[in-house]
Image (cartoon, rainbow, N blue to C red; front, top):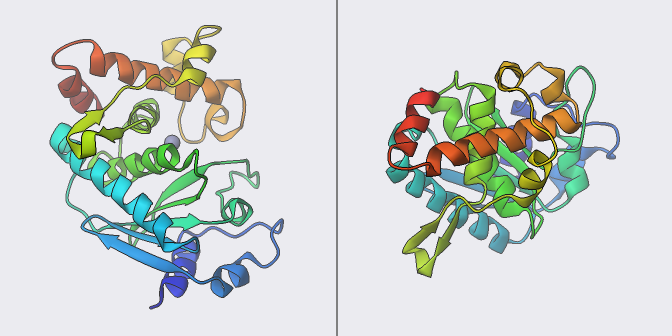
Length: 242
Ligand SMILES: [Zn+2]
């Protein structure tokens, strides 16, 4: 199957109906020229230039291999994740998930289908690394810890969204503060029982608003604290997740 057909089949397999806001999104997907890059743990498909697929594949494969050393129990053997990178944000948005008929702006999403796991987002030079890494961590947790609490799932995804390699891959940079989370948390916090009670069907998660922003920010802060509070931080996170 060509990369173009694979991309279209993958989007249909996500069970996501494209919204009517975009004209014939399926026809547009089929008409675009798609290219693919494979690594041991990923298949990246894009209608952007091949350099985009190579950049995303290198970034996510490096994250995968780093997490396999850092948090081995959260990275289990599974079939490669399919990563679909749109060059056009409005086309990506046409496939964004809906909840009870409502669709909001999402930078990307991950989907665990019956055949394989997928990550979908639009390429945006400034946002791609963090969005790709956030969604990829979800795809790892989907198989390693399918019952992980939502706050921890989002907290781990946010924490590793800032992952960077330095010195030609010899050094990992983890824990870079996320300024928007830091600023938000200085004004308001959710009581912890409320945070831990938020589930996938909760309005606080499915609707845009300050509660959802707080969920991401506070979950990130808890993971950041657990990771950096001293020795044993990673082990504590692994045991919490499992
Ligand atoms: Zn997420």
